[in-house]
Image 1 (spheres, chains in turn blue, yellow):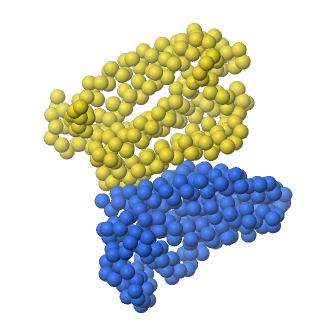
Image 2 (cartoon, rainbow over the protein chains, first blue to last red; image 1 turned 60 degrees about the vertical axis):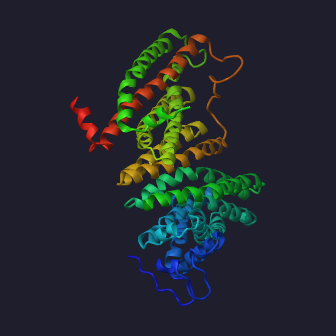
Length: 256
Length: 245
């Protein structure tokens, strides 16, 4: 089930034991590193593991493209109509795609004991959770933000609106990743927790959806979109300060 | 100041006995207030000059909506207490709150829809307050779903407590972000300082209903709490004595 490629020499090993001993290649051991170093190690490890399973990386993006494609087929191919619903389509699709990837945020690490090693490493679990959330955002939020303008173009958005759409999805998805990390950590002990994860995460992500869709809509109509974008940024800042704490608490509970 | 009263509350047998003793003290005033409020609201109060008789649903709608939020706050506080001091009884309180709060939220949504039909001409309107009430229902459902999904009761307690605390931070954010849209809902007309917008014959029954619903909630909570404690402590020896008595 957890088929991981053995680590290449000179990189941080993916297995749990490697976290306690100093890995080769000058990478400090997790337990001996400072909080920031430890977070960087976890971030690098997660990115490395993700790039070894490229198909899993692409899946949320393919899902996003598929959902976007459903709407023209289900409603009408007229660009004037599609342009009206474009913000909603993009944001609903991005939220769902991000959720899809969240299910795997902690699952493998919980299975092979890595999470336990994190909790026992003496490092602040909050920082490590923040690093894992950053990795999730880099792997799904950022690619989704890069894809959103393409989807918007196909839904009839003018070219001038693309920077605004990219920015709003990029900033908004930070908060989605953070809230999702709490949800994913809480549902760790739940069998088939995917549906529950969406039930927990979607209501909490509503503010992001509202401000994000508004920013996108304003961008498409050519109006200034800075106000909702700033609100999105405020939510992201609030999330960065509080969500890793809650996620760390939730992970600790799941390990009890 | 001694904290013994607080510490004793954390003991399941003591909390169980106290809940049993307190229940009638809340249940009877609640019944009297609700009956009196209903009579005052449905019979004595004059019909509204704009909404006619239809406005009378406010006597159920407004207290339910008020309770939906208050129960969530109570639940989150109990969950936080349980999380911080590891008090089992506090987790039991939080667990007992959730179904009650979900029911109040549901009642507020249904009465709101029934009220909306004659007043706005539609059962459902995507208006901020309706929408945040619906989101609140989802928060309750998520809380109960998480609790039901985790098999180990202690982990279920603590995980759902984290969720309740996260939720309570989010409720105001959700509410204000949903208010982003324009509202069809009439502005709040009860909690306003200065000149009251309601004559006393309408207002007094409403306040009676609010207080009655609050006491009703406490009574329900105490009953549910006893059930919750019984099922959690079912292997403890003191239960045998209580059940035999």
